[in-house]
Length: 102
Image (cartoon, rainbow, N blue to C red; front, top):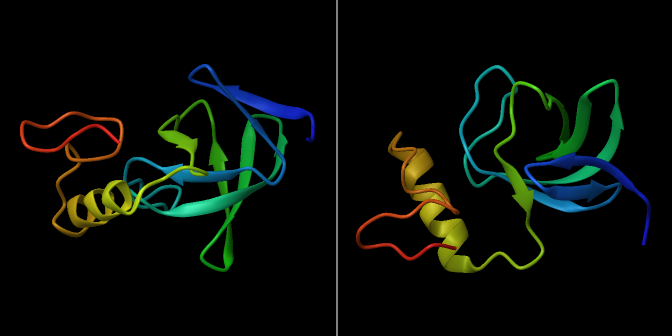
């Protein structure tokens, strides 16, 4: 296992970790439910390869990221649906009256 690069919200991330973005963000061009792979961390910028492009995320401005190794189809589906309809409350890690926490 590689050394940890950065700690975000009490979670350690390392090079080649599979991650999921938990909230839409136009500035960093990421969507709720989008999955990627950590490539590097330098000067507060987390570089993630996702959908054929490198996303450079300023970790002081965007912390809605989690590991994606054990993501379920249900969790990813809920994230994609909420992203598609513009509703950010029904994302993985957030509770909703009729949706279980992922």
